[in-house]
Image 1 (tube, rainbow, N blue to C red):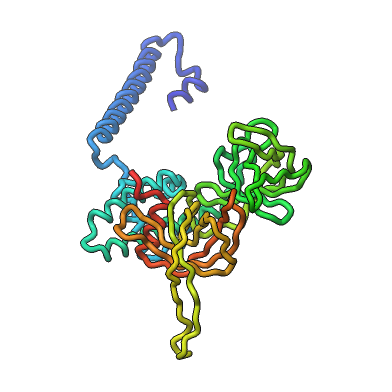
Image 2: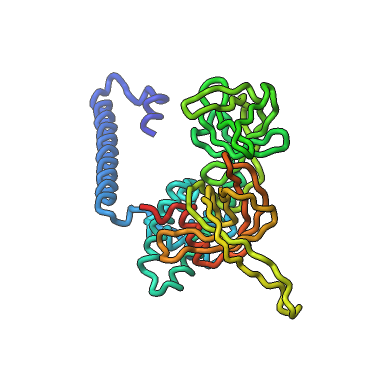
Length: 367
């Protein structure tokens, strides 16, 4: 109102009445001074309350949690677990935390360790851990469906990939993406000899990111070049790869010693009891090169037929005895000199083994 008078009613100040003009100026100055004092007091109080941790601090909201968790389709028990993770971690903005996988894993890892320490029995611990991992996997699954494909220039060195050429698949590693091309391991045949594809050969390179997002792109061979890692296949860049069908579970590359046994399926004499599984006595060895809650890939020196059922055992640092699972070979491909990589789907996994697998995949057991 005062500024309106200043701008529109010039006659309010009359040259023949200086006392009235002075009074108005004093009034304006007083109002400005009061406003400044109020503002300073307000800011001071807010600063004090933040330092003192009083009521001005943001508090955990169950309503905000339920709203943020809705897109992930969690059931009642899973939401309770998520509430436990966030409350114990001091999370006040659930939606923001859910959007940051690294921060989310930090809170889940802390909750994982708390469960291990606070559980009264081994059975209780395994039950609570299984529920914890079910929540984390459900969040992963939804977030993977909205994955944005990286460009081929964003591939990282040592990225594991599968090269397909002439209807044959080979496990390779990305060595470099600098310059005009992509350098990957030169594939080898069954006897270990290098396969030198002619220039211009059309190939497909498929890979998975650390958060289990799968992508592939078509490329062509530019040639073979020598590197400090040995001969490498040079491929052309291809812009932005296409998203592959998303896996249900996060997968982690690893080098984990394992043993496996062939499992025979025998028809039972009594048809009501169904087929019987017999584990053969001979043990074979290999290395788990990647693993998820749904399956694993094992590098081994023998040829294993597709469809074979195996009992797989691997050492788990938090268990005295090896953990075991039943799996079936879905496909195989060459893994280098004298080796084969078996891609296996888990058929039957005890809860303790599944928790061990998820601990490895999410890296919650590591310091």
